[in-house]
Image (cartoon, rainbow, N blue to C red; front, side, top):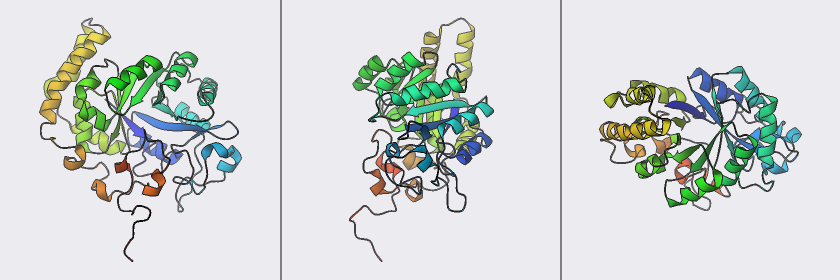
Length: 334
């Protein structure tokens, strides 16, 4: 299983900054994830939100600002200012780190249709990454995944879903992905449904040690986390119950085709997961050790309840919002 730094090593560094990505490499991440959005003048930047207010000292919609305007903003801290990360800068970083996996999420819905995907294709071609097997495009939008399949047919395409279930059949049909991505909650809620896809699996967001061990035991291929160093230590300390990884490798070496080998691995993974996560009857939030070293209720994610208004609901859950801040309109003690 590969450890993927979610928006860089964003648990300890401002997300989507070059500092966060440099830290991810230093902490041993196998890959990095970023979100991309278009500026008003057609340039791609790395930004999760539709608006600038949460992660920069600016305001307003990303799509209403020009690149020149965005370049004046601070995406770091007051003590260590950093510019908003331009996608070209991210790709320069990727070229400088040739062993690093790239997971690039296209954000939808947007008013510009598939323009994001067209600009993405042009920039990847410019940097020679349009046929690189380490480049993977991910999205909740089946339309985007389908378009990437036509524009960049050599790349892995990962359809993101919140939970396995009947709805994913339509998304897979419309998008034609080569891999699936599922939320950690969904992976826990329906592991059999997840395994039934018989496709490589991407999972987000590992917040606890138990999340890491659970994902490994269930056969996840790529696990996204804000804390890559801690996730790496947890993964390396994990017992190899049943040696299911070695068994899957042996099956492939023996001539078993990829689909049969994946099904065999899934069966072994279920047995291993039962042994490894038997104590995890509740959720990882209840029983696991938070990867950041703090109880999740005390962890400041940088998100406030008022920031959640108008967010991409597919990418943000209530537990991602800082609990310590009162909701708008709630009286607070002086």
